[in-house]
Length: 366
Image (cartoon, rainbow, N blue to C red; front, side, top):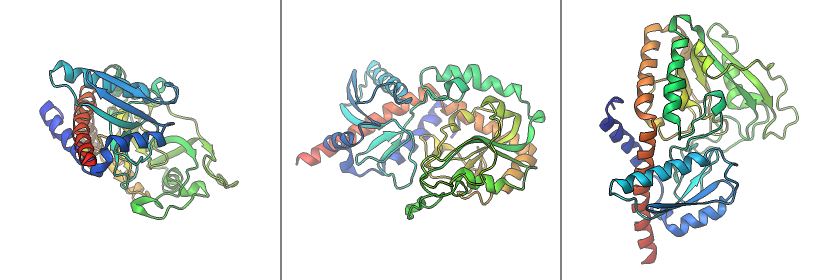
């Protein structure tokens, strides 16, 4: 894919969308199935009904409860309006959108991320998030291009490569998750986590310990979270001061720790910044994730952080390679992660969903 070519970007994004749509069973698109799934997900789901040029958003929660809701409304309305204006109205469609961090309803549904490979019915879609807007990492759809142009891209100039601290930085909270890292992956038997050392960020900290020359992993807060164990945080490292989002570019590279249970949703804005990204190989997939290539746009890190140290050593020592990787990462972000591409994604997704729903409803009626 050439991120400078709109045609190339559209083709690549279309291939990603087609792959996502290939996994839900045909019957899971049926209107009756969607409506039944909505009844099960009323606290986190929005039932969207498209009757071009009108769109209806049905939900039982206050609109302000979920910080992705406003972006969903803006994206779908823009997609429907653009298609109607072009004389190619979107088909009558009823679909479910999950607006919390994620779940796997029994119907084909859209959501911010597919957190497990087994979530075959969840179709990742661009759902911006107002959360973090004040800190610089919000992803609200409306105003996204302006945020990129006025805040993210210009910030790179304040942190020239030669002046960056030659280490890999991670800052974030330490919150106990429900399951131990890796126990649920690939259909495994999930095991409850009883210690901070068993969750993703704890494992990352342990892997980084003893290597302060290349890794600076610190927690800004700690919480027992979902754990019922009274001593879940026993022995946890002292907390450290946070580093503001844009100021993290003062380090040569940034570690992104994310599994299904501690997804930070910051990869999108990070791709516009000026530091190398080390991405944790969790199963979480956002709508643009398949377009990222390891060792082309980012440095991959294994699920259990078994290769964190050599990855960090490369990111710190590889001067020319690091600069080139950041340039490719930025080019992809600037060509793909735009309001226009995201609205087009929604329009194409609704068309594909509508066609499958019509076929499923016809099959059910026979």
